Length: 141
Image (cartoon, rainbow, N blue to C red; front, side, top):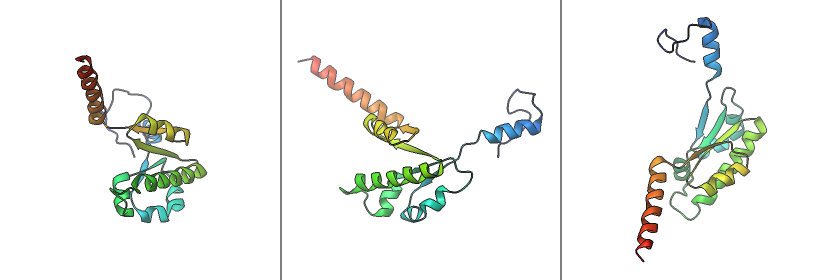
């Protein structure tokens, strides 16, 4: 439910009831699945009315599945991502995906993901500066 008070914005029209209806229609809810238990009830969870999109919490999910830091982590998480995408598509819901590379983003977009959270600001800055340092060091011959 959206908050409403006279000072929230400068619009005076439409009437308060119409504004609340409009504001509440703009709310977009994304649920994060972080446990094996959630995936045991995946279809039920994805069918929940009022939830627009779903994502996974990759670190928490990997820990709960017992694969965090192992060679099986990436494959196991990808399997869960694929299951989530299929369940969401079946119900007409969206999937949000946190990715660390453009290759990952493109992969999941091809799989039907429309909401991509690309890396972190510090990760992007670090990669950019690392590339710049490598290039400039190479210029010194």
